[in-house]
Image (cartoon, rainbow, N blue to C red; front, side, top):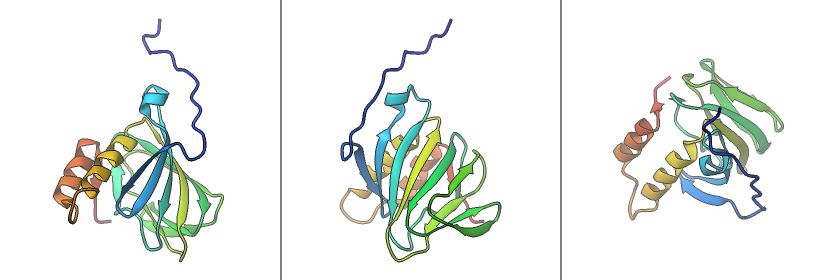
Length: 154
């Protein structure tokens, strides 16, 4: 017998997802852990030209991306490679990866993580970025570590 809470249908209409801003990116959370029983999260990420996270790995989540608009390079398997719009990229937990907008227009990605939780990390970082002055990067690194996300130099 399962002890999981039964899930219910969720409808998120355009323009109604929770918007979070940090690291120069804007993510719109379409589905979070509260919607999926913690199973996964789904969000769109808009990254400005030249933007993207530092190389990192996740201890907790698998992550997959669908390139919706713009130009993007992914770092995976120790090398950078540009992929076209429409490409899907899967990154298993524990592998060092990142992406960067290599174009001159905003990059838009649809991202899923399994299990959910990345949206909580990003929300906590957004709170730090919303404070007056520059963000406390030591605090950001600490928040990341609490969520099993670790930044590295490849």
